[in-house]
Amino acid sequence: MAPDSGLGLIRKGFDMSMAVDYGQRIPNNVSLHSDRRLQRALESWQPRFLDWWRELGPDGFQESDVYLRTAVSIEPGGWANFAHVKMPEYRWGIFLTGPEKDRQIGFGEEKGLPVWNQVPGQHRADLRRLIVTQGDTEPASVEQQRLLGRMAPSLYDLRNLFQVNVEEGRHLWAMVYLLHAYFGRDGRDEADLILERHAGDPDRPRILGAFNELTPDWLAFYMFTYFTDRDGKYQLASLAESAFDPLARTCQFMLTEEAHHMFVGESGVKRIVQRSAELMREQDSNEIRAFGGIDLATIQRYINFHYSVSLDLFGGERSSNAAAYYSAGLKGRYNEAKINDDHVLTKTLQPVPEWRDGKPSTTEVPEINALNERLRQDFVRDCERGVARWNNVLEGHDISARLYLPHIAFNRRIGTFAGGYVTPEGSSIDERDWTEQSRNWLPTDEDKAFVASIMDPVTERGKIANWIAPPARGIDSRSFDYEYVRLV
Ligand SMILES: [Fe+2]
Ligand SMILES: [Fe+2]
Image (cartoon, rainbow, N blue to C red; front, side):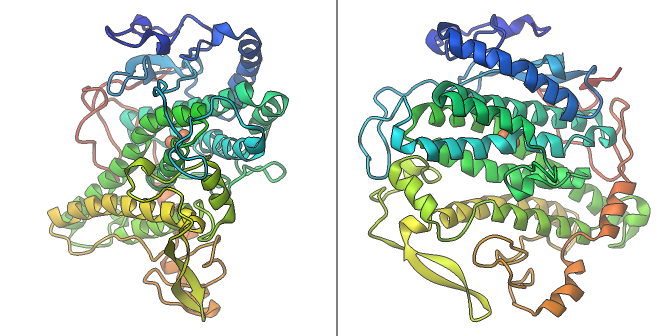
């Protein structure tokens, strides 16, 4: 049991049928005890998950008490309980948002029919693939981030890292539950394989490229949680529209957890920009490395890298797979219900980017073939908001330089722009110019070595590394100098 008795509390007026049961080995709100076979299968997967966590989860700190939030209900705004917990004792569980009465399929060929509570045979392979691909990213990011605890800038940041890590572990549970409960034998096999693939493993890598690179430092960590976790938000949001109701409800709850991950990223970068701006003012110079700060040019190169890699995660601009998923009702658009159109999309056209005559251009395709691109554009608009907030910090310090998102064709490996050479401003250049100039646009070995050189851990309460400003407020109304992690 977790050390805090508050985990058992259920709020008045709460729908008891969806209450989280912490009396079970696997906390859940899906009445797991009523399905013995499924319960036993998941209970035999649990020790393998814990072995994975100890082996490839955070390096060190497994005996430290970390001030973590745990889900106690699925009600919006009332679901979190905070307590000091040793990470291996975190109550990873299975939580679905409550069912919506008489929910109907919102898009595609079966629009208006009741949603499915079982997997239709003809969609089994596609649904399994969507769930496995999502599930594979969750433990991957924990593996990528496993060395960061040893160089955390403060106990507050250390706690945030671990919160993100345990919740990615829970997201794995969310997907593994679906595989076990709805996909029989091959679902169980897939759940095992997710623990056998590892980020960066040459023989058994993670499925998606961006999840195979180590997150080497905290600037990269904040960029990852800002850009790459945000890709996750858009993927989850489109799966939250699914006609397969258990998947939709699982993803709806995951989104509430994901919001904190993106907060960690956005506020983390903002606090670095703030500290850099302070040092630039103090020293009256853009060159602040000698004073232990991260210069804006380096921050911009990290943005360029993480943003472009995250754009790739949305897939090709024209996609017949995405079209098939949409017409089958498996994966919708972001905020599908709020969009005012026919939700079938076969009669309308949509402009998409295209590499033509050696430069970025656009073309029109049937809207249903442009769904990856549409989701990517929703993502881009969302990314711009954070960059604007970072720039407000610069403006507040009377610094005229600005951070920006590079052109969508910059540094792409997937889709129409793969193989082209494009500057962050969007002009196409030849390979020779790219080789000469890309060191100005993407993090260099020197940048990475410099950032690594200032990543000295700060573990004293209320203290913070020199390269980042303290947060405006703490977690759960605690102050910044609260003992967020009790080190042993
Ligand atoms: Fe996640
Ligand atoms: Fe996340």
